[in-house]
Image (spheres, rainbow, N blue to C red):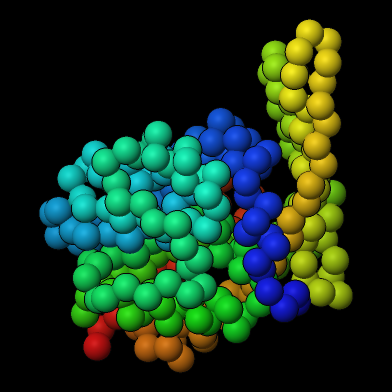
Amino acid sequence: MSSSSATSYNKFDEPFARIYNETLGPSYNKIAFPTLEKLLLPYIPEGANILDLCCGTGELSQWLLNKGYQVTGIDRSQRMLEYAHQNAPNCKLILGDVRFFELPPTFHAISSMGLGFNHILNLSELTGTFHNVYSALHRNGIFVFDLRLEEAYNSNLNGRVLGDIKDEYAWAMKNIYYPETKECQVFVTTFQLRERDCWKRLDTSFSVIGYSQAEVQSTLENIGFTEVSVYDFKLDLALIAEADMVCFVCRKTS
């Protein structure tokens, strides 16, 4: 695996932030909203204090705020947070790296939906992130997050192309998986209409990692999380057509 995910995070400024804000984020929230409705919200008090890690462009933070919760969002991308300030103007938003944040234990729940943790490119940094979460949770607080497992990148996602075309903007995104490093490189090409019949092309890429369910679960348990449960989005929650994308739910009980 790669030694650091700093460069991966930096790629979330334009153009990817716009793609996420306009297309990928709203599409994924059709999965994220019902997941939290089922696995998180029934188990926290009214008005609970929730930390939204890798909050991206803020739609999920605003959705939680609309339900009466106190919400703080953290994201590494300045451009993502610019969109988040528009989409969730009344949420507290922090520009910061989830691998290194330090907050006091004031949160009843911490969630990360949108596959943000797949952008953390080694288990050591993911472990550090889990430690940060543990420190920021109330006793008996709940931690919920999603992941795409390594099996997904190695099979049905390898070589897959996504894209969209608008009047003034077009984009395409392709995944290439490298099994020797367990790294999936995502290539993004955008075309922006600058003036009449004049388009500007921009190419960029970033990497993601697919972890195994076993290594993530054992890491959580070694840190001290208990009641660790794993839900497959296809087999258990019936929310998407593909398997190998899961949601972890666990507690801090001490």
